[in-house]
Image (cartoon, rainbow, N blue to C red; front, side, top):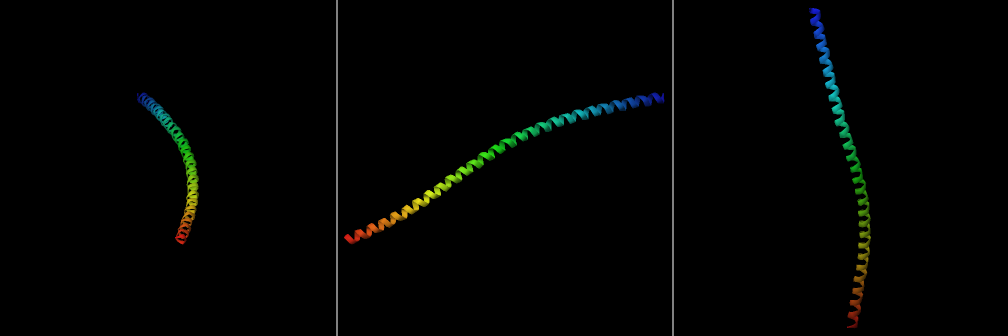
Length: 99
């Protein structure tokens, strides 16, 4: 009878172990599926962020080019303004000589 009891206990322990193993395998599969999905989401997000970065860098280069062009235009306007002031001084001087 003790042998039968031990055999029954052994069967129960083995069944519990198999059940626990099955549960752990299922939990592992669920976690793996979750993490694979998360990795795919993060890869998609990374790809989108790289595109945003590339677009932002292109826009930054374009704006730097526009800013440089505006600086050059401003410099030319300042030169022209100085010449016009000189012309006005010259015309005022001539006008005062004529009066």
